[in-house]
Structure formats: C-alpha cells, structure tokens
Amino acid sequence: MTADLVAIPAQAAALGSERHYPEEAPVRQVVVEGFRIQAHPVTNADFARFVDATGYVTVAERPLNPADFPDAPAENLQPGSMVFHRTSGPVDLRHLSQWWTWTPGASWRRPVGPLSSISQRAEHPVVHVAYEDAEAYAAWAGLALPTEAEWETAARGGLDQATYTWGDEPEQPGQRRANYWHGEFPWRPDPGYGRTSPVGSYPPNSYGLFDMAGNVWEWTADWYGDTRAGDPCCEAGSYDPAQPQFAVPRKVIKGGSFLCADTYCLRYRPAARRPQMIDTGMSHIGFRCVLRSSGG
Image (cartoon, rainbow, N blue to C red):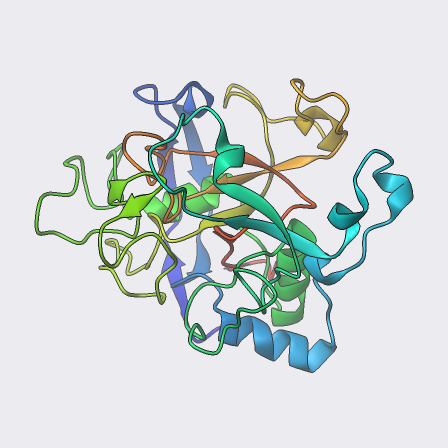
C-alpha cells in the first residue's frame, strides 16, 4: 500500500488565495510536517482489492432508512448516488439540478447508473465514495486522509502562491495540463473531456503527483468553514447555514474535477476548496491517502 507514496518535505507554506473565491481567503501561513502522499487518487482497481478483502459495502450501496428522510419519495430511498448528465444544450448555470440526478443503483461499481460498470475503468479514480468509505479504505491500507493543509501543500509542488499546480499561467492552446472541462459547460465537452480519465493521464506537478488539478475532487479530513480565518471547532460548526433542515456535517474537498469549467467553476487550483456533506458521494469525488511520520 506504500509503493506509490511520494515524500513531501516539511515546510512553511502560504495557503489559500485572496484572488478568486471568498471561501479561499485569507491567505494563511502554516507549518506542515513532512509526510508521504499517494502519487495519484485511489483507483477502481485499488478500491476493488479493498472490497474483495473486507466485504465492505459503501454508503451508496446501502438502503436508506425512511425515518431519516421523512419527506423523501420512495424512489429516492433506494441505494444510489448523484450522477452527472450532460444537458441537451445551454442552460442557466445557477441551477445545478439540471445536470445532477439522483440515480438509483449508481455506486462505485456502476458509476453512471445500474447498467454501467467499471470493466473499462480499472485505472480511473474511484467515485461515489462518501467520507466514511474513504476513511475505511485508508484504515485498511494503514494510511489516513490528508488534512487540507497537507493536500494543498502537496498540490502546490513547492510553487509558493502559484495559481495552478504548474505555475501562474493558465493552460495554453495545444497544452494538456489537467482534466477539467474544456468546451461548453455542461452540455458539449471537447473530445476527450467531460468524464474521468485514467490516473496519470496528465503531467505531474513538481513533486511528481498526478491529478492534483481536475479529474476528481478529493476528500480531506478537515471540517469545512466558509472562510479560512479559523477552522470549525467540530462537526456542528460545519453545517450549512443556508440549509438548516440538513444537519449533516461537511468536510473540505480539494482539487476540482473534470466538471470544472473556467466559465463556471475555476476551482482546479490548489487554493480552491468546497464543502461536501459527509454522507454523499458523487460521480466527481474521490480521494487519496497519506502516511505521516507518526504512522497515521
């Protein structure tokens, strides 16, 4: 489980950004101890070995308890997950329900619905994993999920306050820097984009880490707060104040995904961060693990 781990040196780092989205600010100076991190996200093949060894059943594969969702229609209580579907044409980007659909039967094994499979996606990042699924894999592997500071430090590759994992200049025509949305979002991607790609399909950063920009968002161990001015004290501090009816804790996810379009979600950058409810996997969220000198 440690063969693909890359050593990240201890360092003082400036994390965050004050040039993009408000939740990324303020820039903070932190000291990060040395650690090792997986060179790429956990793949379907990796996750399958874990499931075969343990019999683990992911959150998306478990039936839902009707008592926990008293107002949900019966069809939404079946095991499933949120799946991205391209729209038929241009849409109002304020309404993401136009391209996200609760899909019964979707899971890590069946990433776009019950008739799909991972038979041709063994080296793609595993998706539809909730936070506890990622934690369970990490524990089995003798590893841990990274903190936000660890993840961002690794993603920066030693480039202090650079906008992207490769530097300050955006991707230029003819370059292939990362798997983010190229084309017209959310309906017409350029050829070769608009879905996950096998890990390592794009150049690594300066530390030799692949897919730290785009492909899939990645879970971190940190509770989410709406700014980086201070970390939430506990899971209750991570609840979404705009949705008080959902008392579900949220963790920080990092890295952006194949769905990040410059016109909609310029978040395939090290400083970018989003909240994700811990019980919800989606077709653009995966993870990678770390090994600390203390062992966890």
